[in-house]
Structure formats: C-alpha cells, structure tokens
Image (cartoon, rainbow, N blue to C red; front, side, top):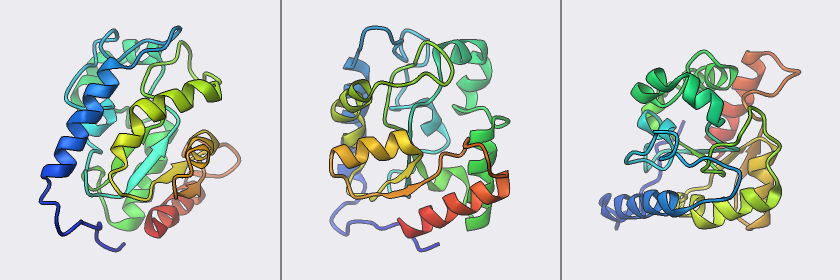
Length: 193
C-alpha cells in the first residue's frame, strides 16, 4: 500500500477545519422519516461514529451507504459508544480482513457513509433523492481531495451522480462471495485509490 497522499501545503489545519465543518453540517441535516445521530444519542465530534476508529483525515477513504439503522444503534448503544462499530457483523469482519491484507489498521483509513442519518429499519432501501441530499449537504465535505472507494452500488451511484472520481468495489456485506474474496476485492480497491 502506498502512503497516504498529503498536500504539502496542508499541515492538517485545513483538513481539520473541513472536518469540523462536515460535523456541523451533519448536525444540521435532517430528513423526515429518519433519526439523527443526536436523536439516537450518538452526537459527537465526528460525522459518523465509525470515525472514532476509522477517521484518518489523510488516509484512504471508503464510502459506504450508511452507518447503521436506528433500531440496531439503540440495541447496541453501549458497545457502539466505545468504538463506533460492531466488529462481529459481516461488514466489519470483511473490512478488517481487507485491512489485514494491506498491513493497515482502522486508524489508517477513513470510513464515510454517503447517508448520515439513521434509517428506520436494517437494510432500508434508501431512495436516491435522500442519499443525494445527504451527500450534497454533508459527505461531499469529507472527501478533502481524496479519491474515495465506493463500497457497493448505493455509494457508487451517488458518487457517479455528482461526478466524483472514485474506485468502485463491492459492499463488504455482499452475498455470494466468501469473506476472503470480498476482502481481497476491497483491499485491491483501497490500493488503487
């Protein structure tokens, strides 16, 4: 894996300011039918709680559909409050395997959902208009010059809609492939980005 690209003129200050702006944008963004992180008790100095462990502002960026649904976030509140993700779910097991292939840990990457609110149910079919609204209001401000890896069709569609150069790969939870095959495809995409 090549080292993360850094803009020679950015000592971290511009990225940190952009990140704080994205956090403020996430706090202000609402759509009917969805729960905000604040309403679910997960407001913090992050755009998404997964960034507690996967928030490297100069690391490779993996863009996904969403963080979690509202019922799952409520059910696992105590565990999520300490690390921002559930290690045992397929998404995270595959992501950890991909990072192992690259010799990286979660602290070396940045994970961002295109949709920053909590859907009402697991595997909620996210309307394109809702995904685009969230991306436009919040997530596009997290890119900071990186070429994101779109993990899954939902993220890729949003990035294509906004003409954001990206590398497309499968979603870590995709069925039909074993964990090792999924991890290899995601590792390859992260290297290509």
